[in-house]
Length: 158
Image (cartoon, rainbow, N blue to C red; front, side, top):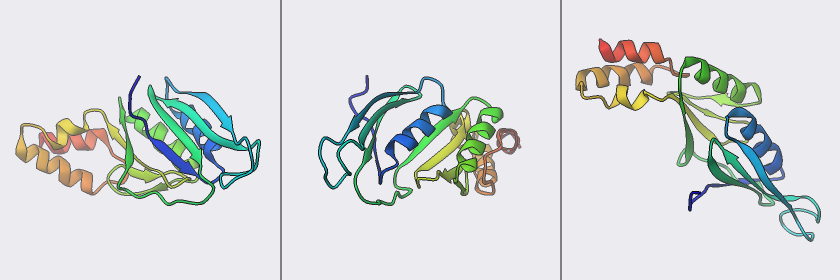
């Protein structure tokens, strides 16, 4: 078990978001839902306060903090995908539920959380021992929205 886990702040959507996230990846599940014990800033007694969940083996907590907070790109979640089919499935699922595509394999989900959907071999292409190949792969990546494994590989190989 990891000693450090992210806490995501929501305004009444913590349980909905956690359920959505765990539906995307294997080894994911809701661990516990804790309700507010009394009326307070985070909501009325009996409404959801915290959701502890596991996403692809990583522990998370979703908190209904009682007000809207904006996420920034300063923190994002990277999903290393085994193949193009996994990239496509996750990309489509996050967009189909109100997400917004951004450049270079990034997108924001409907809650404003930033995700990087990348091939597992991505770092090999942009930081490989062939510096000219890495530069070509980086240039190719900068022109993409959703990442294309084959195009990155071809760019790297020249």
